[in-house]
Image 1: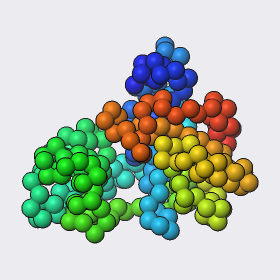
Image 2: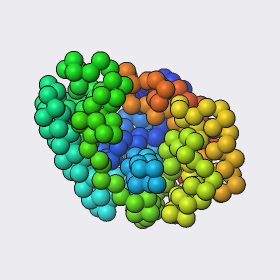
Image 3: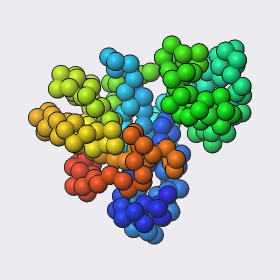
Image 4: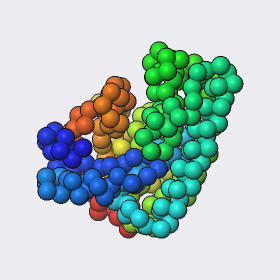
Length: 253
């Protein structure tokens, strides 16, 4: 990944896998001789009024006991949820095994995207969208609610380890009233530039961030080759100014 980041012309890249920092040290070591900075981070899921929100934690220290303990518990809960999803799908007649899902996760935290890919690979679903529409969406045979921590619980943890907490890809849910509430719960910034955000949405979120004294961030939300689309851009596919990173880092406790 660091070589591809350099070839894409990136000076820095944030590695924010869901619920783990396991790849950060290796990525940073590989990136150092290439002149690419790796910002260590993680993507958390938190409970909000509409259900689930993704929260980006930046500048997180891999190996910190409190952080690793929390993430281990989160991954264990995700694994239990993954097992239950497979069991429900099997009871519904879907030809899928837990091994299929674990193969898609490649050692990472299990989630619905891995189940969706397994369904597609086994020919049960036509594509990613079909897998969610027929099997994994709310109210569908394989849907299992995700246990979610409160926003202020996670922002407190992020601040404890001198990190910065940023709300990811809010889109139209990023209203002024909602952002004020999130700021009171410890939010430091908001992701304004994202593949799903229109220019108008980016401009609106940027204005609100300025009004509420929140930092701004942006990113490609790259999940690997083959997952590009409306929600994910290719690596280096979004132009994020270096000064945004500097301003974000200045928010560290």
